Length: 264
Image (cartoon, rainbow, N blue to C red; front, side, top):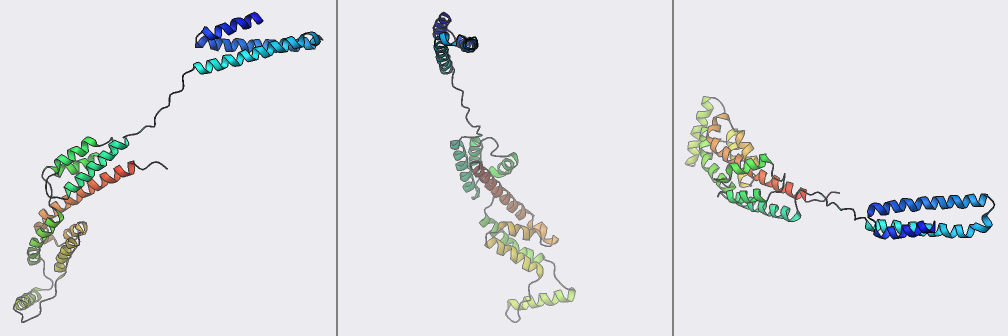
């Protein structure tokens, strides 16, 4: 048994990983056999003469087994650590947000913003710019859109035409009386007639524009009487386009910022 142990020690230093695993198994079998032999000897009444040498051999076998296990463990390569899956690096996400902010500044002007849009698309991480948002931005990037100040000025030009075409309340006699009263008020001999519902609505659109609430102005203008809508078609188209573009840029920024929030 000591000869086998000496041979096992030499093999553990020169064999491959498969040989070391075989050594571990062999040493374990030897330990089991040694313990079983010792137990049989004790049960046979010979414990007094052979117990000490057998215990020493078992101890040497256990030490050899522990050394073989340590050697095998040190020879194994460490388990690879997989990095967490990320759709974009922090640097790429920051560059995309900076490009989106630059586009937002360009959209606020009446000039085209095609260059800013192309830069933002080039820096966009996967999934950061959905197709519907990209289509809205690209559809107006080449020519640009009127600013809110320009839309306010254009509506101010349209307002007198809208008032002149607005439907009048009452019958023909009431409308004639209101017209006479309006003409007299221009020279200061009569008070002006009270504004009609449509005239109040037309003035309400102008008030929303002065407040900077373009969305409310568009909603109120779209609710004016049908005879007034042909005059408002072009203005409403440009105003709605500006709202859509501004909302697309804002949604793009919000999506990019939410993507940077670490999970709870």
